[in-house]
Length: 113
Length: 115
Image (tube, rainbow over all chains, first blue to last red):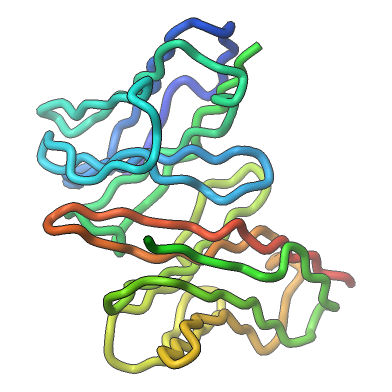
């Protein structure tokens, strides 16, 4: 079975631009979570979506938004990019809106210049 | 608010030696606790988890962790380290507010294994 997939793998954006990251969960998983991992730090929780509804939100500004589609895939949008948004963005999927069966994707490396 | 502290930023051990990585958490309710491993170029992988019951939990790759409520700790151990264990290790705690959930990670401990 395919694991969690994320696209793109890498991308470079300029300050002020907007970016959309995509995540496809493991088949049968209904929950998707997003994390930001800055170099040298642990992942920071951004959002969790379960059954297409937001079920958890971390301490991120409103520039960050997400949605989940009927097929349970998800998009993370970041507007008005700042240099500090440069990070590895991780997506994880799970069966339910809990974290004990969570599987991570390889991540999208975002560089803001 | 919940938090996780991993006091050791970097630990070096010799192959075959025992290992203990420390994790302290802060959370008002009964915690759900996790240890993850991240190898270079690899995604995060769950090593083990604690929800309730036996305070000593077994995980993959020969790892175990012990939950000590009195010390707010969830330390990861391995009796004999292999070179392939070199990676970054993250402790995490799940918190809830009603039907919403959040996962908080520590800053990680980088493990180096000497031959």
